[in-house]
Figure 1 (cartoon, rainbow, N blue to C red):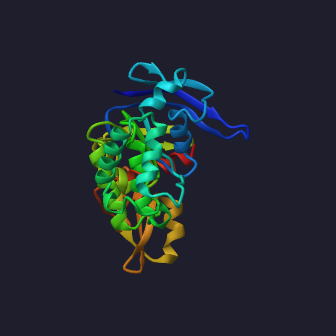
Figure 2: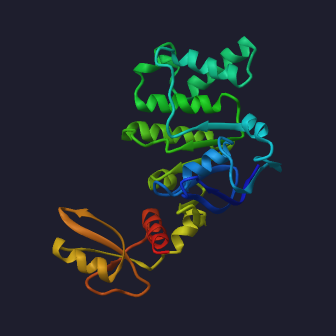
Figure 3: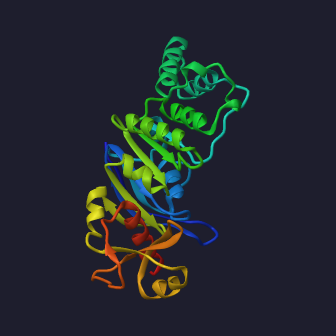
Length: 292
């Protein structure tokens, strides 16, 4: 089932316009939602999850108006928010059993089988009787995705799931998400470009509450073909380069500044052309949105 979002808007009492006419169609599979902090990602996720109301617009999932029939969406939804907590003294098994009851799985045998299968899937079965308070951040994230899966959802939302994880836990969690995304719609909301590049068949970039680009990653990359240039320079030269070029990024390479720019024509000054990556596209659209 596709998730169809039309002209969704949300302005907070403070005057911040978090969503400014968001229109998106999200198909089955893994969908990446990229954007910096403050772009509106979390507001959009909470609105889809029926945790807050929009000012205007519509969300439809499987032909049902989500904003009018919130219980329908809640039955089909698995949600892993950016910040969540567990009772630290409960075991992983007891925690998941508790959430299964909340999701309406009242038969004890069915619940035990479902909890065991999910703990196997997220690779926590061997520690199922250990207190969650002693889990690492990655283990808690994997338990969180098990909670999101407990009701056999058709749509799963994960908000900044790999922030703060070490590289091993991050890859373990991404592999788990990829497995989950084979059968349902998964929205991965993040500011980490690599997560989207590794997992998602389609994506969108948000900035200032708007969709600034969307599509397949390879098609979005093609937007910058033959327009990305790079050079290694000296620190003293950076102000002039920033003033004269559309700077995408700067970083240290072997201890010296390396700048990447966008230019439709060869810029000269010892710049060499490079194949754009998704990070270049991200910086391009975020920088261009900041100029509006």
